[in-house]
Length: 625
Image (cartoon, rainbow, N blue to C red; front, top):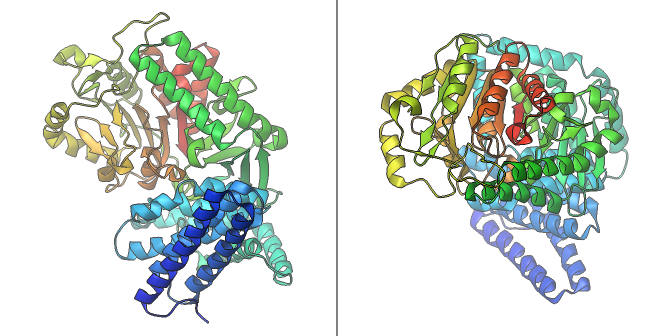
């Protein structure tokens, strides 16, 4: 019998009331700190979750039932995750939450509307928790499935549109067919193993995580049939990760901070001779450690902007964070999986771990990017799309632009940087408000001396931009904005040296301050040339923001969804000095002969060997294939 009556109104009322009752009991038990009552309500939450999950699967899913399931599953996940008493339930709750999210996402997509803020708020922190719970529950595929369903919530439609539009371009269909053919050839052994495992599992008694494992195996087997392959990015969640590994040749490593430790969930390319999914405990990479290191970096740069500390103190703070991240992540990872030293790696950091300098933390005394072939990706789906585009050789279609001033802050070395990089490609840069000729009235961002050296930073002042200054520049956009958009869509390599405005309250309102305010939401309406490399020599635009850090929502993920293959950016401010200009130029010189991640890694390795301060290169990261 159905849990709820059939009318939408009745189902809404019954499902919401059922959740509210169990939530009230949970809050009461927590207030009393009563373990027996908490255990009892945990069982009731679990039972309600199973009923709601069954109700959602019964017929055309009700939005109300999906919403109640989302809230109930999140409560069950939080409860089991925080106590660590039942990792199987925690894993299954994460899976139920992802199922509810997928149904709601589909319904709102049909209506042409984004997921409401209330839904997004329920997803904060879920990807990391679910992945760690799946590691502890020995069902890594469940954690990967949940992570993939959440890390693409906002941009999945844009990625699918990008892929569809690319197939209409010349060569687009051929490119996709080439990837599909390659996928068909590589994983024959894995398909046979999956079939054998599926038959074994079907004969056994299944629990919730095992059911999800079986779903993955069915999806994986279906993906072996070209007739069943709908598109690259519209793959079932966990299958997308495996197909990304197959198409890119990279081993995916999901990074999931937990309460007392963290986990690495590994997805191997089919045909590698290893299990598709593996997990590893990272004892020192817990959520508190991640948050502490992120805050240490932010505090150090805030003190620089206030004039409290200078170059030497900042460099010590940055190096200390690099060493601690290396000890917590790279050391246990490479000790347990030494084969990764010779593998091509794609890191998928979940939650706030995406704000750590994973790309540049030392491995054997050298920045990781200088000794390993490593990249960072927002999700397996993003890698799947990026890896499908061919590597474009940069040439006369490169687009280089610089704007050294916006509102109150001047970053003058962006102009010589743009000119030097444009010269590498034999093109002319687009320069706004050259300080040497226009007499810009902005002040330098670091005009107070400190005891151990001045630190001119490429970042906006700590005080907000004056509305009058912003409006004046926005009113002057006109033809310049049109020219920028045109050249962005045609270029094979893009280098933008300017300010950026990263908005935590509204991520899609984040902006490039280039001749005016170019909002991320506006850029998402455009397409880049498939396979483009984008370098954001701008303040913190390689970072993430917003209330859903699980999705890494920001410029790198958006640019990949628009068609970029590679995005280079900074997680925190970089100095506006000659060493930064040299590093950027060295990266572009290497880019003419290699992939973007190897080019950046080579430039950083050389800077490190030459004794260049870590403040210049440590915040840089490569996102994409």
